[in-house]
Image 1 (tube, helix red, strand yellow):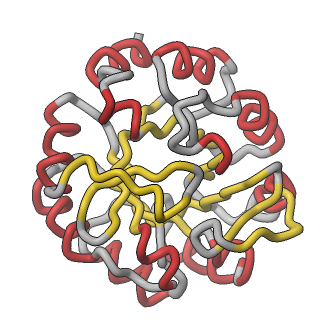
Image 2 (cartoon, rainbow, N blue to C red; image 1 turned 90 degrees about the vertical axis):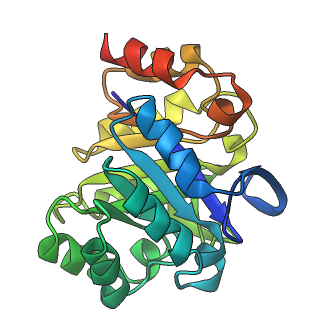
Length: 239
């Protein structure tokens, strides 16, 4: 199981939110590229990036810090937030991103996801953010009637590289991930599923890995707070 340390970008800084509320942002580093280097130096295999402003704006906002991160490290990076058309997808991949994450458009324009996955094999992931099992879009500000599992199944034959499943109620709250819901989703589809939201201890990572069905986990606040030592976590997951 792969651990993806997270850098959430708001106004050019590395922050963490609680339950996705922009007003709850805590700044952890005003130099996101330096944060990315620290993660890379610890030996991570991937870095997970989110343009929080972009998720609300519907277009990239934190392009400068993302580009600085890509220039600073050789570790592959995936990015979500404000990526809602083919031109933006192509632009980011050309700039060196390993993978783009499509969230809102997966609900509103699923054909774009399919077209992008065909055009850029293994470089397009679907972000499914859910509250109470129902998908939320536009930076989690709008809740839909679409169930997370139903949305995931729509892309079974699309060739997407992964699904990033975020339980919004767990995100940033340090209360542990929703292992049962994430495992259920992972077993409902053949697409690799990455868990996000609430991963706050080595035991959480062990529980996700023990399912045998979950391909990866994203952690942010726990790494910044020191609740998880990245080197120790990487060693645990690789054992």
